[in-house]
Amino acid sequence: MRKLLLLLAMMALLGGCMREPILHLYDEEEIEMDLPVIDLDLEVYWDYEIAFGVIYDWRAEWFYGWDDNDSRIFGELGYTEPTAFNLRRYYTAQVPYAPHTGVIASYIEGTHFQGQYDWGFWDMLVWNNIQTIDGVQSLIFDEATSLDSVTAYTNPSMTPSRYQAPRYTRSFYAPEPLFSAYEQAIEISSDLKGFVFNEERNAWVRTLKMVLKPITYIYLTQVIIHHNKGRITSVDGTANLSGMARTTNLNTGCAGNDAITVYYNVNLKNNCDKNGETVDIIGGRLMTFGIPGNEANALSRASDVHDNNNHYMDVTMQFNNGMDSTFVFNVTDQVRKRYKGGVITVELDMDTIPIPQRPGGSGFDAVVKDFEDGGTHEFEM
Image (cartoon, rainbow, N blue to C red; front, side, top):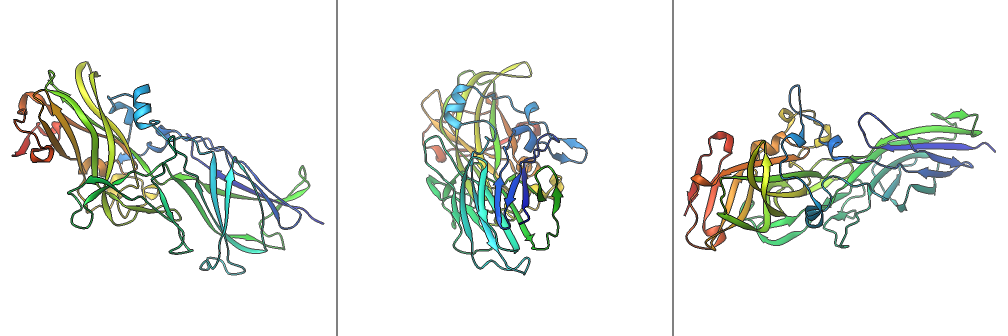
């Protein structure tokens, strides 16, 4: 009896270095899959052009830093390596790219999987199993609506949102880091088409390469406060970013068309260094499904982004007189340029902003344009 060996390499792009862990297929239809050890690094996935010939360097923009306290509040700064996976196999018999009529679901811990395959065509979808520190997961996966695709989404939080009203009146929870790979029309034929005999293993070998890519994107936000002099004393710990996608498709990697506001946490850090100037910074980290209607991994530059949404970031700050104010920043241009995630920065010159004289949060909204535009601002009292 001739032996077959199927090699499956699901690789993360890591600075030009690719690992190709293997899948072994034994005794006709017995396939043993070795999924890869995936090294995920923040710099790798934020290494893209924001304009022609300009490579994005997020570290040059990030002044808030990241210490142990930030890790406790927000988690890791970048992506972490998955240790478990969900595999979905769809058999389409002798018809490639046919609609799915059934699915074989498997859960994989570590990097090993073994299963049975009939001769014919297969589609395979893999995504990382979600693991959180507190055991609470925001991501929800819809596999029931259609066998031909899996959709991920999160639910609304208790935090009100004005930006997508009246359809969505509350901000949504941010998703966890999510990576997926999808391959269609994988042929396993009895005539060994596509297989090569491996003398060392004494088996027939076929290599199938699948690239595992992030389909949720990290944004680091920072409000840099100049000349604060103790006027802003704290934040309420919450912030929102509007105009982001409500869902994503695991098969295509394309974000859904619905726009929502994403809720996340922020923290005030005093006496930070910004190019030699001592400033206070309100920093935070959030994960999103990206800009609605876009497949970020298929884009090469910001000019390819299609976006009809405005993106606003709001942060509620407490002042030294006990009053609070919700500041709203238009960050549309920054989000579009950083379509795979990145650093969103706004700057406040507190010498030009009056201290509110009554409480109420949203009762006093400061709509502030970018500092580089001259520090102009409008107030709605």
